[in-house]
Each structure stands twice: as structure tokens, then as C-alpha cells.
Amino acid sequence: MQVQVEETCHIPEKQADIGTAPLVASRALDARDFTVAMSSCSRLRAWREACVLLQAMPEARVQTNVISFNATASACQKGGQWQHALGAFQAIAKRHLELDIYSFGAVRGAGRWLQALGLFKTVFEAQVQVNEVSFNTTISALEAWEAALDLFGAMPEAKVQASEVSFNASISACERLGRWRQASRLFGLMPEANLQPSVVTINSTTTARGKGGWRMAWDMFQTIETKVRPNVISFNAVISACATGEQWQPALELFSAIPLVRAPPNEISFNAIITACEKGNQWQCALDWFCTMRSSRLEADVISFSATISACEKAAEWQLALHLFWAMADAQVQANAVSLSAVISACAKAGQWPLALGLFWAASDARLQVNSVSFNAAISACEKGGQWQRALALFWAMGSRVGRRTIVSFSAAISACEKAGQWQQALALCERMPFARVQPNVISFNSSISACEKGSQWHQALGLFRAMASANVEASDITFNAIISACEKSGRWQHALALFSMLAEANLRVGEISFSAALGACQIGGQWQQALAMFCSMPELQLEPTQVCYSCLLALLSEQKPWALQSLKRLCAKRCLRFWRNAGNRGWSQTGA
Image 1 (cartoon, rainbow, N blue to C red):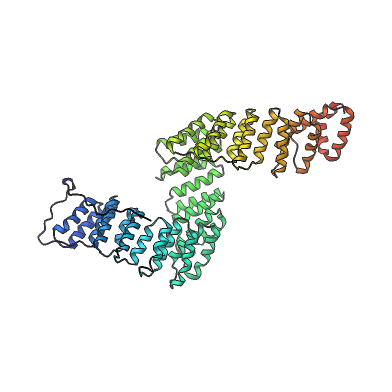
Image 2: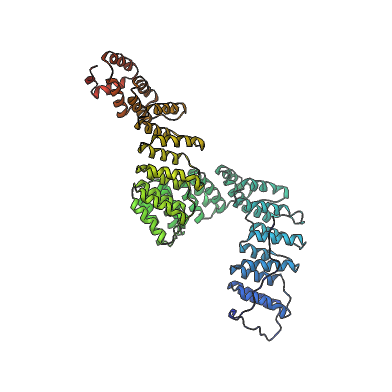
């Protein structure tokens, strides 16, 4: 990896507005005097003054050392001047001073891991002495697991023995980026290095393995008691993994066992169990733990509120979700996109679309975090309220507010147009998706086909059906029902019956809606034999004929001559007795049979 670094340490020139007084002393200043002053500057984030003091050291005939450079780098880092912090780091290397934990700590705090890695490489290749602490601190600063493992693997070459801290830093780097296999492999290497894993090591590995599935984290947790005594962090790691895997019952079992380690649950523990209950659709459980958390004098944060609001939203408890959302302001907790989207969705599901939109615009005006998820929830609220114009307005506003629209955005907007019978708008949105680099899915196709069905646009519906195959999107029973109905309403009974046959051959569910549309097509085409066969097959599929099914078949049979009706009646009586009872209730005797 090639990293560009500055060749010199840039120190800003002394200026009048800095306010640094001339250095006046009754005795000669030494390195300790300068270091104390620089440390004070670091605490006050006075990075300019720290740089001036560093520049003044040669003038005072005081030798600069690693401590003075570290103090300056720390001041620059705290002042948000990462370039100057890295410059001080490089100055240490150029003077071949021995790096220590504070040197790399300043670079790590600067948040520029690529520059930190490049500087470490420069130091290493210049054969400047580096120790275990230098390696460990740099590994901890890295945001790329490959680089962390490469640096870990370079320790033997530098004749530096990897310690437990080295393993912990490398495992944590893998864990942060979801590389649970690599983390597990490092954990397995510790016995070969004659190292005993600590609770920190096991916790990091458990968290990493949890990203590969909750069961893996659970199995890892079972080994803790045979090695070290678990702590609250250990429990939190496994409970969080259970929450991700929607395993709320194991999560509850673990949460109830936390007192066994003689430490009360903390905020992370409660957030994990509330999230587990939310994922498991246990809204009352989530609410109970949220209330317990607050009664335990623990401060609920945005994660606590958001998870509880989401639990209420899934259970259609919109009033509770709204109450919790308003309570965030009283608790001085800043709402985020998750909590906002959840409360908007809760109101939308309850038919409270004006309230949902009011929340969205109020949050937007208050400059709260509004992302694509929030916009999608607001568009869905408009869709459920039949407000297709408002839905489209929000859809087009997304471009300037949050950038790229997602498949959820398109699907919600298309659905809003479909329910309002705006097939042209729905079709235009569907056609726009490839240009927005969004891959249509079965939901967006189904909504577009349903819009065409309501607009009696059978030809457009068939075109979308063919486009699904070209896009490798598998049609569902909803797809077939919509397109069969579109053809039936347009009098294209041959197409409708052909699609009905395809539906049966595709091993998809053939329901009452499918039969109703197909029987309607038979009625239009005068296909009484096929209609009768379809109707008599419904009991075999455990389907109850609808009023439409009865009406279509009765209309077809009424057109036949009396002798044919008697024959058909006997045939049907053997295979579909329920039909005749219902048909008699609907006035079959009036047909002349």
C-alpha cells in the first residue's frame, strides 16, 4: 500500500495574535519546563502555542526529545490539526528518536489511519527502533483488517514478540469490520504463542463471532467459564448477537444471569435486551425493560428509545410510539433517523398520515437527522393515505436532500400511484429505475402491473411481465393475479387462461382471486367446459368459491339448453355438492333446469 506523507513537520510561524509572551525566566529553561508548558497547551487544545514552544526549544538551546514532540502532536490532535500532529510524528522519526505509545497514540487520535500506517512503514524501513507498544498502538488505529493482520505478521521480522495486547488489537480490528473468521483464527493461535486468553480477548472474539451468527457467539460464551470469569461486557456481546439473530428468549436467559457476575446491567445491556425483544416482536417485553432501565437510574439513550419505538411500531401501538418519541425531547435525547422513521411508520400504519407527515416536516425543519429511511416512511404514509401527489413530491425531494433513492423509495412511490389508479406515473417510475441504478424487484413490478390492471392496460402489463423475466426477477402469485385480471378486464380471455395455466405450472399458490379472474375470462370467451373444470377443482385445493366464481359459472350454464344442464348438473353433483347447495340459494331453479 503506497501512502503519501509530508516530508517535513510544518510548524506555523509565530504571530501576534497567538498571545505567547516572551520566555523570561530567572534560570535557564530545560526540557522539563518546555514539556510542562506544552502539556498545558495540550489540555487547553492550544495547538498553535504548543508549536511555538517546540520551535523555541532550539533557540533556548534545549534539546528536543520524543516527549516534547508527543506533547505537541497531542495538542495538534486535540485541536483538530491532524496534519500538524502527523508532522510532529514524522519529526520524531527523522531524528531517530525511539517511538513510544504516546507517539502513536497522537496519530491514532488524529483519525488518519492511512497516514499512520504510512509513517509506521517509513519508520520501520528506516530501521528506527520500534517496540511492541508501537506495533500494538498502530494496529489499534487501523481501519482495515488486512493492514492490521499484515502488521501483526510483521512483528516476528522486527524481532518483536506478540503479546496478549497484540492479539487483542488484531482481533478487535477484525471484529470492527465483521471478519469473524480471521478473528477466530487469531484466537486459535494464542495457545501456540504460550498466551492465555483474557476476558478482553474472549469478549472481542465473541463479538466478532456473533457477526457470523448468534449460535457461534453462544458457543463461544459457553467456553468462557472454563477459561476466565465473564463480565458484563461478555454478556452484552452475546445478548447483542442474539438480538441480531432475532433470538429474544436466549437473550432474556442471558440477561437474567448478569447478576451472577456481581455487576449490575449497564446501558449497553439494556439496549441489547430491548433490541432483542424488538427483533422478536415482543413489544410489551421491550417496553417493560425500557421502563426498568429508567427506574434503575440509567440514562436511556437514542438506541434505547429507538428500539422501543420500533417495537411499538411493529405491534401497531402508534400512540405509545408517539408518546416515546415526544419523551425523547424531555429526556434531552436527540432523535435520529431510526426513531423518526419508526414513529412515522407507526402513525402511517394506523391511518394517521397527516400526523406522520407533520412529524416528518417538523423534524426536517428542526434539522434533525433525516435520511432515505425517513423519506421512505413518509412516502409510505402518503401511499397508505391515498395521497399520491404528496408521495411523488417527497420522492422527487429526496434527490436534493439525501441523494440516491433506494428500491424502497421507488416501490413506495409506485404503490401510491397504483392505489390511485395513476398507471402512467407508476409506469414512468418503473422505467426510470435502471437510470437511477436501482434494480427493480418483485414488489415494484407487482405494483406497476397492478396499476396497469386498474387502468385496463393489459398490453403494458404483459410488457412488464416479460421485463421481469429479462431482469431475472421471479414472478409471484400476486404478479399472475394482477396480469390475469388485467387481461380479463380487457377482454383478452385467451391470454388470461394461458397465464392461469402458467400459474398452476409454476408451483405458486392458486387462490380465489386467480380463479375469479380466470372464470371471468371463461365467461367472456364462452368457455363453459373449462370454467366448470376449474370450478370443480377448487374444493380439491381447499378453496371456497367467491361470489364472482358463482356468478360467472351460473351465467355460462344458463346459456345452455335444458338437456345439457341436466347432464352438467349430475356431473357437478358428484364432484361439487357444495356448489349446488349454494347455487340453489342463489336462484338456480329460475334457470329452467
